Image 1 (cartoon, rainbow, N blue to C red):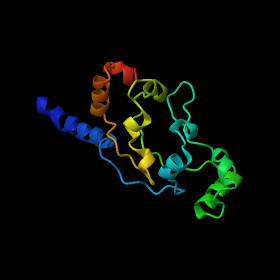
Image 2 (image 1 turned 180 degrees about the vertical axis):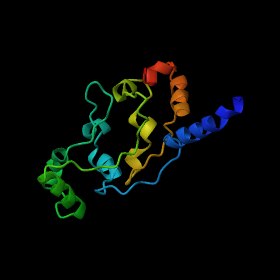
Image 3 (image 1 turned 90 degrees about the vertical axis):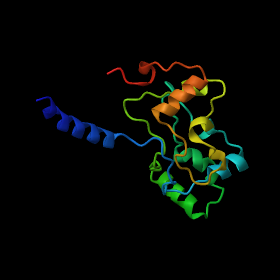
Length: 168
């Protein structure tokens, strides 16, 4: 009788595990709608992460710039570039660029950018890698629970379950 639950339980565990996102494996850069070089923009223009990716209150997300921000320079700079023409088309159509997200945590995990950026020794690079050295971005850092807990231990931050996990 006790084995009658084993098979369905095993199948449920296998299916649930298949549904979990792979947060450890580095990825190759996806083909984005516009080729964008962080390396060029950071090193040549001296842009800082939060200039293009502000973190509005309550701080859960770093945003992606609207085309209007990019066109502030690109209405006059490299206007004949095929990539800038794509940007200009999104802008004139009033559409956002449909960037492919690189970092996503599961929906039951709470992550607040603003809280993390306020910690001594933690920077955007801590989770996102050396963006300033990349022409094309990919997820290259481990954002699994184990990696987050290791970072919390290193910075003497709490590893209490309800700090990061949904209270449901």
